[in-house]
Length: 349
Image 1 (cartoon, helix red, strand yellow):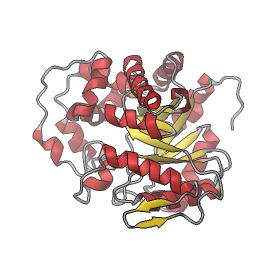
Image 2: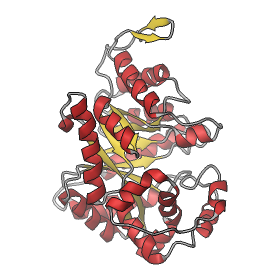
Image 3: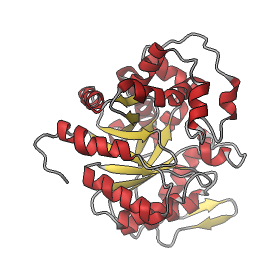
Image 4: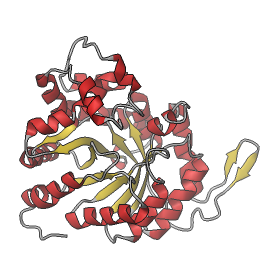
């Protein structure tokens, strides 16, 4: 198996516990982890990343994802460069619009223009270049002293994808893993790269796969109900559902979904979220789950990974349903069942 697989790790516990879980991910065979950045929901992302790289020797560690609103681009650049000095070549900077980070403090997420400007600014600062900030021209003293971490944009909408192709080193895509959605997203990124005079092949694409693994596939799907419904709540997901051949008509969404704190995918009251999402028919739930990622038994998920690799995907980021706990079940499933199935001749890491 050549496809890379990263696991989402929320810094939901004190730093030493986060570092220990990342070490377990490394031992299990994951290629990387993404550390959440949401200042009121989790511990600090970059502090957790620093602890994680110091506790490991091989695994990649990424900010999944930070943003240029709650953190000024100069602050992000300095933090990312500092962590990268601890583990050269193993740190990635993933940046997005900042939905949960901004929503919990009542400010809007970054605009597409802000995203583009932030990425350019951060890359220049980390390279040691001088950047203009209004009336000040400044540089980062420790910029350019070591190879900077690559910058990836977390993208859902077409405009952000084109900007990713223009200025970023890679994309973390929330389109699901259906071949139709994958092809459409890649073409948008390639359009942006070509418009900027870049080679589209130089922009890595990482596809986010919603991942919930249980011994019973229906149990896994039921847990994933709120995540499936969330795909119906945002207009930016419509093109990817259409590309996957999913048309649910005009389903009426319960108003209470918008009252969940802090939002549906990070809901603290997960049982309430599942109750509000009970309206979704089972056949629609099954279709959404397979489009979104790896939701089912270990055997089902292993087959889905094989299909993704055969369809040309080279890198998956597993976004589990666990926001306030470590994904111990998914870790065990990959360590004990999925990785041995996909790599039968490879000894444990």
